[in-house]
Length: 65
Image (cartoon, rainbow, N blue to C red; front, side, top):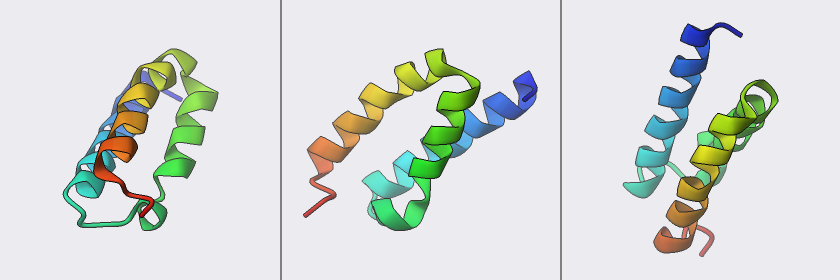
């Protein structure tokens, strides 16, 4: 994966996180899990950076209720 594709993937993940926070789309319907798995395979350091933000978002917004 090129650097440009990696930047685009990060942007898509962050955009989906914003949509989830604003409850425009559900966590399940967003497909963010697959994107996070793809990111982990390509750039684990970036994955480790985004994961705490993702977990915080899920915890604060009570998305699983």
